[in-house]
Image (cartoon, rainbow, N blue to C red; front, side, top):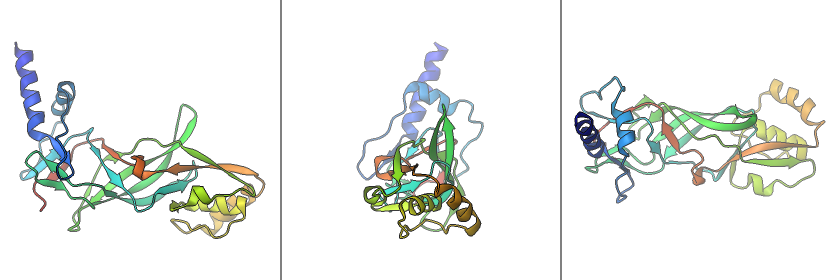
Length: 229
């Protein structure tokens, strides 16, 4: 009987804290099993006047380009944006649409396959308030081959291109018009050139934010103010 009462208490707590995105979107509900993991062992309460968005919640993310092209070994700092208002069950805005998230794309290898994922570091609200955020995207392993003499039009169309990828594409294809997200440092580019010029092809990773590639899952609770507006 005590377990039943604990389950009811946990489920009621989740319903009270239910979070939605968008203007008229339905509430996101957590299953009872998830409710137990959210409320047990967190070890901290939200500060007075603030709301805890629990670990495991996913924030919808957008970016101002359709694609981001990087090499599988590249680390690149970028800034993302929250795609929709994040509101509670009473429609109080917790995280406004357009809030920025700073962090970096960084390489990871799983089961022998190289990929890229985004590691969030700071959440910046429209009023300039900044706070730490512990969240990551899924690992992206979608690759495109860059070949000597090949065309890259489709790969780079409406894409932000990392410095490493820009160097790879320009050196292998001979296209010197590639624009990088960050400047290519002279020493690094020179070292890469001697290797790349001997290659006939290589691979880049193509990230598509509009497909949800960079949606962020909280790895720990995020404390925010209720009713931003």
